[in-house]
Length: 424
Image (cartoon, rainbow, N blue to C red; front, side, top):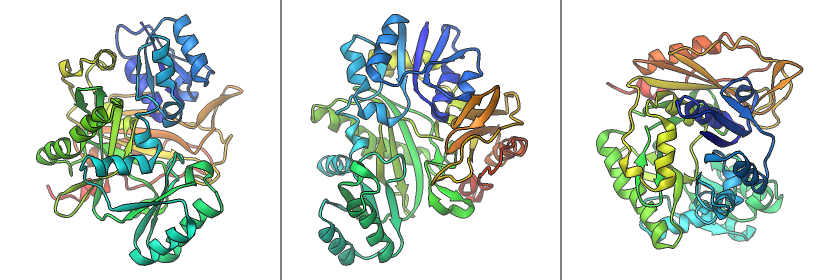
């Protein structure tokens, strides 16, 4: 059986790596893939990005299932195109992907369906946005309406920062069309968690919980990034909180999309804020798995992912029970010099060890150049360690991180700190 994974990041490497472990899989194609997927005999990179051409490739190669990693092809309607060609693909349609591709759509949807989230207003007019900020005060959150590769959210701790963010998005047009409209919402305090489920249109299958680390530097300092590390499971999501999130956020979202005539299929990722009293609110929706959360989640998944995907595209996820490694998995992102602004490319990477039962290295911004592995993007690698506790998983990950070399490498030393600090 042949499978196609669309994307080039660490998330896609992890999905392809897991799918390739199935005995029924003869080849996993990755479009376009990266240096890590290029170096794995069970995976093959294909240099196609246009969704229509990918559909032609899937027909020609008799691809059984296609799995889409990133948000951009989803927002461009790759699922619609594949389905029009009678192909099996796991992901949301262009219409359903608006939950991620338009912050305004998502906020209006949550309000309409009573899903807990922050108070907000949407603006296209600069003067009105500035007046609203002055009336609300800081801290306050400014979000570009459209897709901005994880860079479209500014958590402004001062009024000046908030006004600057609005100017950057609406007046200077730094984010292009993504920032032509902004959502301004109340600041929510608490601890974040990533809650990811698979949806087949009606049935919902929760994946293991995880927690991401958005800031570039230790102690959650520095600029926001796409994510500098993650671990799974997230101890903040207790069994009772898990049930509450399903009841108050996930179920109403899936049912609401169906009611609105836009049934949801694919990965649904709710970025949550858990306040001091344990109440969850929705910060954002993503219509895909998180990156880097996918890497530790896939490292813990024991169930055959191909079987799960077959159920997902056939509408029978209710027949699936997932089995997880009881250990904690913790992923540390190694980023290129200059990330998150202008990452440097072309630095030679050495020292990546072979995979072991305790550690696996997933590639993101890597490529092969003249027989050498070099940096080719902002987030370069995600090193996942597994251990019986968060501390043990940390130890495994960082021992490997310390063996890997490339000039200007940036990484945090404290991934998992909240779980380590949490009272037992």
